[in-house]
Length: 103
Image (cartoon, rainbow, N blue to C red; front, side):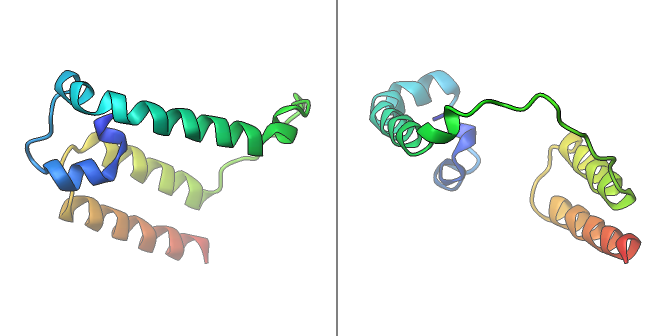
């Protein structure tokens, strides 16, 4: 529902994204039926799963070296606010590094 959660809004508005309050004035009412329908259908489709008990005894696996590299790269990329080519290159470098280390 929020402007940053929908990639189509990034395409439509590009560099002149509406602030949250004006966006809500334009899109809150059309979004409400969609959100309500999605919630209802997901609740109905997942009703048996939602009624199951949740196990509290969960073993947490240790993160592999490749996993630690990927996590570090995600955090590093998240700190950088520029998108596009720098993010793509960082992702590509991370992929190559993880693939090299995991072989």
